[in-house]
Length: 152
Image (cartoon, rainbow, N blue to C red):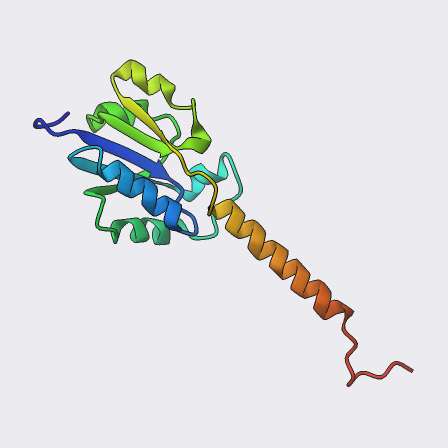
């Protein structure tokens, strides 16, 4: 708490920004007075999964353009101990695909919410669908006979 205001922090990669990202940020906004959103740097993301499609500079600009965050910062680590202490964070919100990962923050007096994405859109699903569509289209093109090419 800072100046009797509840400080909320949420973070993510926010690659290929979609409606579930927006829902989580909007939910986090409703939990306090000040919302800080951390955007994972490309280097951080590459340390635990494939590189993002959208570069960090563009992802952070998208989050900054939203009406919900008060502050948008780069996120350099998945260990949030220091950021919680430095920014006086009271509430931490993250997607439920990370359930249990941030329970250690409760020992620092932080309330942790694992936002339920539920079924629906995700950056991973979008990427998989794009790849599947590309591969399908490519196989159709490769199997077509070109009437302008004559085989002797």
